Each structure stands twice: as C-alpha cells, then as structure tokens.
Image: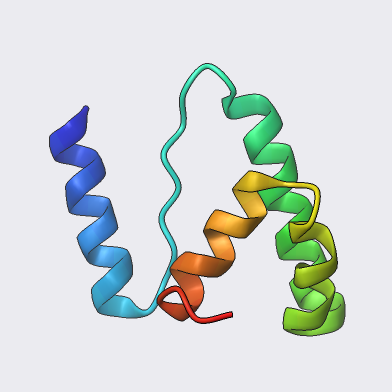
Length: 70
C-alpha cells in the first residue's frame, strides 16, 4: 500500500529511524536486515558497513539511518 509506505517513511524520518518496504523478496530482505541489526548491536556502524557490500537491503538501511551520508 503506497499510502502506508509513505506514512511509515515519514515516521522513520521524523524519529531518526529507518523504513524498509517489503515485496516478493521480503524474506531475503528481512533476513539481511536482521543480520544488519545484529551486526550493529555487536559492532556498530562499521560492522553494518561490512555487510552492506553484499546487500542492497543493508545499503538502503544505512542510507535511511544517516540521511544518505556514508
């Protein structure tokens, strides 16, 4: 639902959070995002950056978290 996605994206932007849309590839994307969350908890942003090289979902999450700064 595009309206719901826009609402969640706005909430993420206003709160400093992140937003990810899910589609047919959702199971793989979710697995990557959960790995990224675990990496961030264990090793911070640097650990997430290592995962980002092989995952568009993680790159998108990093972009959401930092407003596109890298």
